[in-house]
Image (tube, rainbow, N blue to C red; front, side, top):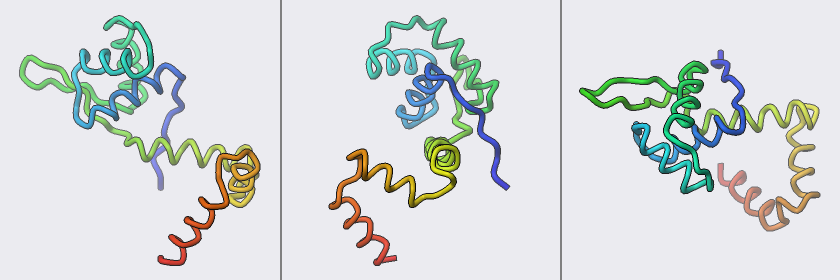
Length: 126
């Protein structure tokens, strides 16, 4: 059985993406620097700390002490979160039809014929 992953606000998502992008267990200052530089924010450490506390509460992160330093351990991977997002999109907007989802992407120009051909080759190789 899959673990239920809580929904995130847009701001929580930016902070969580910043944590994932560090590639390690970051400290607060690293997350502040990353969210401000990558997403054009001008957030103070207290603001980011508030979002990090919410992410701890939603069980995306765990605050842990390493000596005198506090770091954030990732509990929900970026891949698990992305899977949650696309599964919700497919089930809610596309009647649980992956074919309808892919057709929508193709019709919107998000997926090209070349992309589809490449995907078919990859599937054939499986």
